[in-house]
Image 1 (cartoon, rainbow, N blue to C red):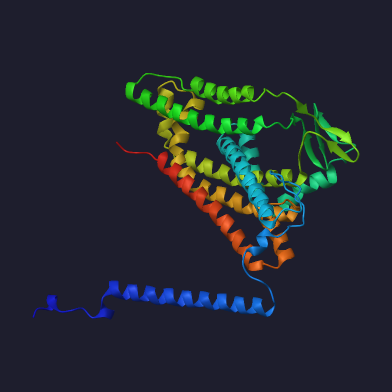
Image 2: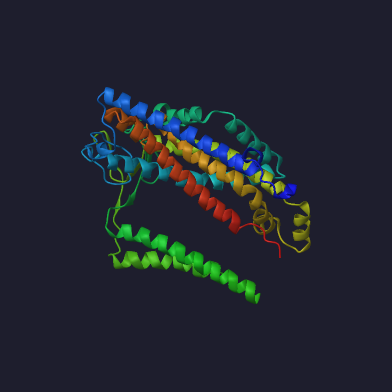
Length: 389
């Protein structure tokens, strides 16, 4: 019998040995997890603390100032937690949008040939990045709490817009059922506009004919919501803020906690994004600028149509990390009193004693936010990646 036909001993086969080690590691981790679970169950039972998520149907008993949906203190805990999730999503969505926008602008300014502009941008980036975010949140909140005047002496920078220690108040359209459908129409028209633009660009690539997609996209974005508004009765009533008692009545109020949180997160995250954008632009060969200049393309067009599209392959991965960071940093809202998911879950935990369940909910919500963001950004990164022909 030759050596090749001899059976290799189990512990001498690397593939089989690695499988065995992985199984042993899995058993050890599972055993440790089961031990923690049994230990927690024993201690909770010893202290007469009920387990499970049945508490979610109990009356919450606390108010939430910043609620995007109708909520009262006698609503159940699950609805209070939904308000917290919506508040966290609102902060993450708006914050990331403006952080990317402002960070991109600052990243371009960092490379400006204007000495003053580039130095100011660099000073902004260096200062903001080296001050802890929590201190920045305290700073912005202190502006409203200590510097801005009270309600009766509120600042009135323009029109019926007022700024005071209670936040920012401004006129809005009065409540009407049609506005809900108008927002749905805006969302639907955005999707339709995307496919219209995609179709026109594809046709331009196939035929070589220059077709302006902006006009049909703009008309779609305007006409569908406008038709929805007209069918719903075309309401035009506006509710403006008026002083009544110790606070404003009417209008829409953005609380100082939300304003401070948004400014702090946007300013802090945009400083990191600015450095990422600067590095991405510098990664593009200088020959691209020279080639564009030789074709008579302006510098603004070169930046928008040539350089930035190529720089995105370098910019997108680290920007994804910054988007996730802003979303997770929004949990610092509890420090300045904004009712995000962590704040609402902490209140729920203190009132019910269901610490394990509430911590699991916090972990689950942020895990969903992080995974969904990563999936979308990975899809977008593959979509805009350069493909060699």
